[in-house]
Length: 238
Image (cartoon, rainbow, N blue to C red):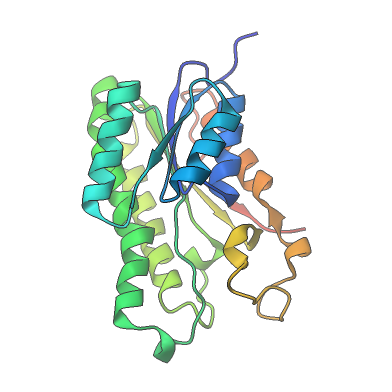
């Protein structure tokens, strides 16, 4: 039986752990060749080895435009074209406004917004030329609701949602699809250094969404018939 994403080339950022790794597994399981992008070379190599033939590790710092350009070239050299881009990598450090330094704010905007834009900028011309492709943006409940201690994270995610809306407006009718997947708190290693889960501000980790649920939402969107675009999916714990 032919797998739904057979011979499709996919790129997933932040793919060394958590939501990104779960998405990479789901896409590979559906037949896609997957390029895994993140900073951690060792973790990426292990993940690519787990996914098997067709998966490739592309380590690099997506917080810099040079890092994005190098990653885009590596993927293009290996795959020739990108059919699916999943912008997942992100920085989340909850902190009161006065405790966020301008440098930390800038770093959050760079990773959560500028890097996704740069990757879209890199793959979109090829998608337009072929008249098909799919760009998936991983948002957050914080891309629509402002919470305390999200003075850097929420602005970046609100703007990322706006980028998705612009893509939908510009790409409608081109054959290129754009989907925003916005989960609530999700149980991933991002919480390990934060120590906020279960304190009242955030639910305990066992009550959060599993990363696999976000991956299932992405897989649902990208495996719809080509004339069907799932514009937005918002996920929360039951």
